Image 1: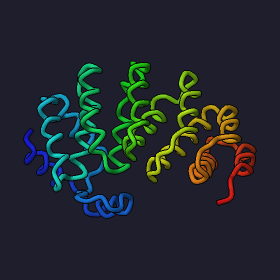
Image 2: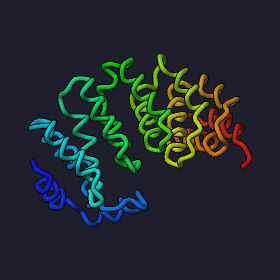
Image 3: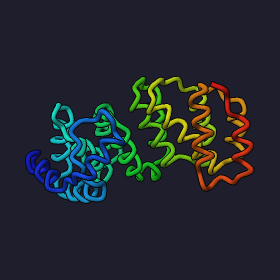
Image 4: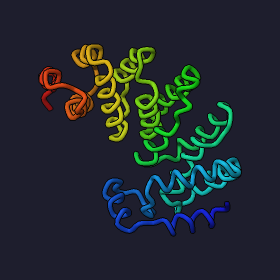
Length: 235
């Protein structure tokens, strides 16, 4: 499937109402058609079964173009998730894909798709951990969202909290992912995460956002929420 065919398929699936909704969620992101995620996943699975490597090469080039659709970048990342390939090849494709991520929508939807990370946790933990040192807002977000999707477990909890305590990325969307990750750690490991929040060295914005997002969870009881609110810092 060449790029023009892909674009025509996306244009046919566009929903004007959903486009306006997405534009509000993704301010400043251009060329959003408004194709719903289930349809994008369907197209990505089809492409992954046909000639995934050729498709990915086309999407790699397309993602660099100024007129690239938001949905083309999404397909690029989703096909990396669905295609059959070995870890080394997948790593090479991620090395090319992650630097073109420019919004949380593409980042998060694709990270959630990479369920194969759980099959080789040591290999992929090392990979995503390296992205925390990328110095780029979405490189860091890619790492943190991958962690919250696939690595919030006993084996990685200590490392995750250490990383969150040491991160200094200033980008808003990286900080929000950091807060989201801490909140997910609290849901699964409240005692350990509460101890972390009592003494953490995160900046006050991220610290308070971590508490806010945890308190918004239906999986955290009221008693914990009261204890957490007492840890909020004054601006």
